Length: 167
Image (tube, rainbow, N blue to C red):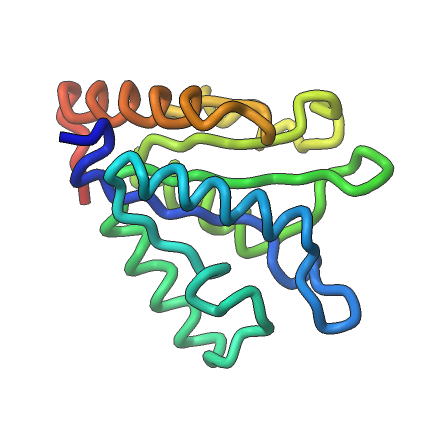
């Protein structure tokens, strides 16, 4: 059995802010694809708007997108947020990712935040301090595949032991 077999992971991160000339940022696309591929190879079922929308501007309505993402949040076991920074070390703004972080912590879902540790000051206090209210781990955006998988495995086994629902 794979380490994350049966674990449902929602992977989120900025979308709208990463489109330049109608093309999604290639570095972030690669980071999303590597993250999703790593999770899937470990046995996880992965939800991702980036992949569902093929890294294109959404063809769904706002209501459809919100309903889909909320449904994914309800059914996931863990939320992984990719939070890159811009060339000045400032977190790329994402209202959608902020809402998803709010949903996940309100539902007491385990959260893994993948951020650029070289620029931690570029993130808000609320992002840096979420572990005060919910099970949250901060990893570097460029963390190894093994570190991400072992963190999710540990967090989901702890949340199950503590009686935190898996959806």
